[in-house]
Image (cartoon, rainbow, N blue to C red):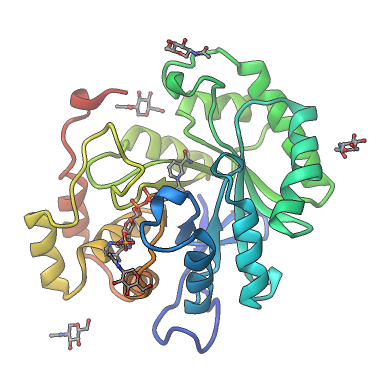
Length: 305
Ligand SMILES: NC(=O)c1ccc[n+]([C@@H]2O[C@H](COP(=O)([O-])OP(=O)(O)OC[C@H]3O[C@@H](n4cnc5c(N)ncnc54)[C@H](OP(=O)(O)O)[C@@H]3O)[C@@H](O)[C@H]2O)c1
Ligand SMILES: *[C@@H]1O[C@H](CO)[C@@H](O)[C@H](O)[C@H]1NC(C)=O
Ligand SMILES: *[C@@H]1O[C@H](CO)[C@@H](O)[C@H](O)[C@H]1NC(C)=O
Ligand SMILES: *[C@@H]1O[C@H](CO)[C@@H](O)[C@H](O)[C@H]1NC(C)=O
Ligand SMILES: *[C@@H]1O[C@H](CO)[C@@H](O)[C@H](O)[C@H]1NC(C)=O
Ligand SMILES: *[C@@H]1O[C@H](CO)[C@@H](O)[C@H](O)[C@H]1NC(C)=O
């Protein structure tokens, strides 16, 4: 089970924001909220501006991917922020099961340069299949050898000190189990779509047993959540609950995730929203309200993917 520690990540930028961390691999502490760098997440600012604001406000965890084309923007934002490299937790994703040689070439010859860093905190395999329309449950054993070969490449990059921790994204429990069976280690992280109307208790329990931390993409059912049920931030049930805590709907949804051990990836151009996201740790939902929020999702039979 991952160890969750409360840690003061920064001083003097945002008054009340203490972001806890979770130990995702030995000695690797990941702040429990991330800023996403997919362009579509940001409606009213550039990726570089959004990240710079996040860093200025005290956010320290940034999520990007080769496929987003925004690694150079992340690099520029980090550089311009003046925040020390070692204070930042930087995640990127390699496209999929591309194989051992390709992943090493990509990280060594492309990703590090684009990000302007000499190591990456966390690298994820973005998808279990090459054909995205097949993921996750339709992949079956297709590409199994490529997935394992790609993991081997990542573990070699880790041994070289270029990557601190390695994980996966959009994997189901069976695909995670392949890694465990072959390498006798569990992925540090599995980043999957997760919000109030769309979450999977079977997956959560399987990952918890392995000590794999779940990260939530589209954590507020935002721009990337197309194709599955969604509960909007304006939902009357969510608003009524939020009002009782004197918090925003977004803060309640993020806190529901973090109290369940899930690390949200979100994004905003708005300074007020970004502050609200970082300050979502300053209150706690009751167990009863967490259970209530857990139960808002429609039955899974309605949205088998
Ligand atoms: N691994 C994968 O396959 C995968 C897939 C999709 C996405 N992702 C990652 O997940 C990231 C986030 O995805 P997403 O954009 O769908 O996330 P999201 O958190 O569900 O939605 C982001 C939206 O939430 C709004 N927001 C944020 N904080 C708010 C607050 N306090 N109050 C009200 N609204 C708030 C923002 O709007 P405002 O600007 O108006 O605040 C923003 O447009 C991506 O950038 C990417 O890094 C990964
Ligand atoms: C976009 O951001 C600017 C400041 O960066 C703000 O003045 C403006 O109101 C925002 N527009 C919308 C639609 O959020
Ligand atoms: C990187 O590029 C160089 C020169 O193109 C090549 O020799 C090398 O094998 C590549 N891969 C790695 C992992 O360095
Ligand atoms: C991806 O899968 C879909 C549905 O299974 C199929 O229609 C499509 O041709 C596949 N694409 C490639 C490039 O294999
Ligand atoms: C939930 O996750 C489990 C384990 O990965 C998977 O077998 C199942 O199909 C998932 N359920 C849905 C509705 O996606
Ligand atoms: C509710 O929160 C606002 C700031 O978000 C604060 O100004 C106000 O005093 C709070 N009200 C109560 C009753 O705590």
